[in-house]
Image 1 (cartoon, rainbow, N blue to C red):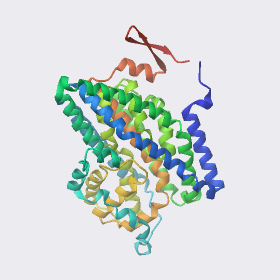
Image 2: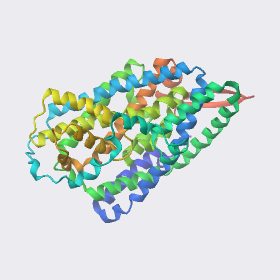
Image 3: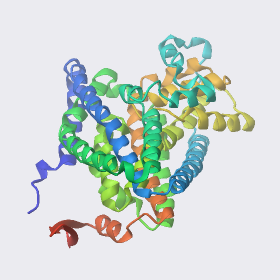
Image 4: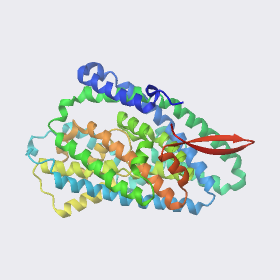
Amino acid sequence: MRQPFYKILYVQVLAAIAAGILLGHLYPHYALAMKPLGDAFIKLIRMIIGPVIFCTVVTGISSMGDLKKVGRVGGKALIYFEVVSSVALAIGLLFGHLLHPGDGFNVAISSLDSRAVAGFVNQPEHLDGLGGFVLGIIPTSFFDAFAKGDTLPILFVSLMFGIAVSAAGDHAKGMTATIERFSAVFFSLVKIITKAAPAGAFGAIAFTVGKYGIASLIPLFKLILTFYVTAFAFVAIVLAAVARLSGFSVFRLLAYLKEELFIVLGTSTSEAALPQLMEKLERLGCSKAVVGLVVPTGYSFNLDGANIYMTLAVLFLAQATNIHLTMGQEATLLAVTMLTSKGSSAVVGAGFVALAASLAVVPTVPVAAMVLILGIDRFMAECRSLVNFIGNAVAVVVVSAWEGELDRSKMNAVLHGERSVDVTYEGVTFVRTDEAE
């Protein structure tokens, strides 16, 4: 029996987003008070991300059995991330040159007040160099990684523990079984938390519109439109081509992940849908091992939306302040942004911090110019997060296909609208697929 439309999660989230926009526009004072709803939902999700990553990675590695395979999968994922991220950076520059979003502003640098962005520039997250970044991956203690909630340290601890469990062989079988049971409980908790997604999306959107106002979009509408057009082109051309070469449709994948996409849209952070993404990709036919390795790694190393945003934003600021960038300076910009985007958390505002770090390294465009886009950055965060999320979903399926760890019959059944029914008989589970109603 088909579920009533008002009980479908993505319908609820979409309605909540519309209500949040309306409240923010009509009653901004009340809308600002809704911020705790969005913050609470994101904190609930971040609370569960660490255990979900740990359980998935450890059980995935132990199921592989061969540690060489772990290295091979990780190596392929990193190569994919670097290639696609480079394309995203280049596309940001290309569309910036084609559409010239900053032309006509003619802003005098001397008239800019950098105090508004000083807090972003002074954040040390990206300014410690490569050595600081690497050391930041290693937590102070085993439990410190989970206490802070940063994805990379959690992934590092999980990888080390998974390798140790795999090396222990038969002695650790009980440990693996216990972690699998914990995994089932944590994913059950994810389902409970996800029911609060409409409230989280409502609070986050209402606050954003109430604080900045829809009217704040008008002066910089060309930049916002350019960014959204560029992001759409990246998904529709680059990711669609990558998906097609791997034997699936990116648009069917987006339809399959529509609930998660609306959650990301409402909360402006791809972290809000990380656990659900891992679960859905396993249901799609990707192996648990590949999902466990690629998704958490991608959340720090495969930020396609942030990459597009950074190069496009720098070019916009240069055009708005009448600064000419040479080909050499643009090449340097590509190299720097490739580094500063790594390890950038998927939370709101991380892209703006990474942009500040890039301008600090390439001072041709002054950091003070960032004040021009400070007011509208939140409205571009949704698109950044959506593209980051989509890019990581595509990456998992592609790496699974490369590894021969993709159940194509299951994937085709799911993406083409069939539903799977698990039937257990005398301890054996059979899967029957029927056409969706």
